[in-house]
Length: 133
Image (cartoon, one colour):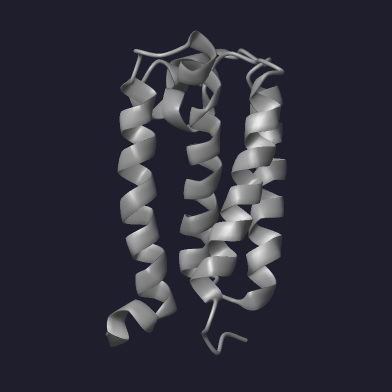
């Protein structure tokens, strides 16, 4: 099937898989407490890697995107320590909590690294067998 060979369609299909899983997982609360809180960071990282790759589908981007996603996510984690009124207001909405969160925790960082690593592997699988520059 030609559509599955197209790199953008592979990325869109991947996003269609990861996004619902990540969103559903953020509401799943029937397991060990640390699984509920931090594992969502893995899906968060993979999602942003795939979304960025949708717009920048190059071989060079396969390793650059996960690296930048990791750096930006780590910076956003530290941003949670800052509580100006504007950010408190943004974080009061569901989408604000999902994008920038509100509670700093060192425990998130390993999951960000794992998620970026899995995002890199996912991108490598997407470009596998294509003539991407």
